[in-house]
Image (cartoon, rainbow, N blue to C red; front, side, top):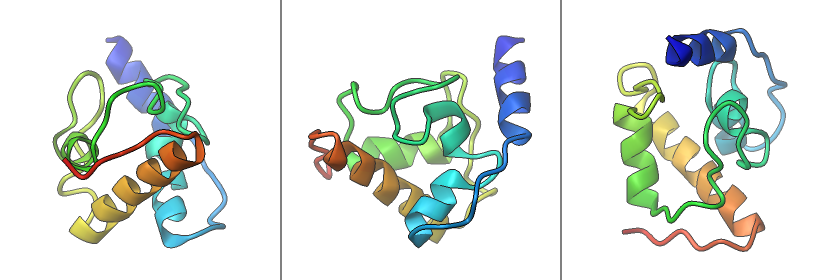
Length: 102
């Protein structure tokens, strides 16, 4: 039930469309920013900066969801999934975290 509330809360958020295409995908209404925060440090969802993540694991999680996260495959294009992955990696880079490919 709590997961449904998080998803419902995420669906009502609206962010400005400024920034790079990758940032825009992350910030778009009902997407990453609501649950993971503007800088990836977590909000209703987990902190993306304090986990050991690879680009492959980030992309996989976006595609298939799980652990309370909705599946975005079929809702986002392959290009948008790649852009969201790029932005999470960029947020991690800005925080001094490495994000290897695999």
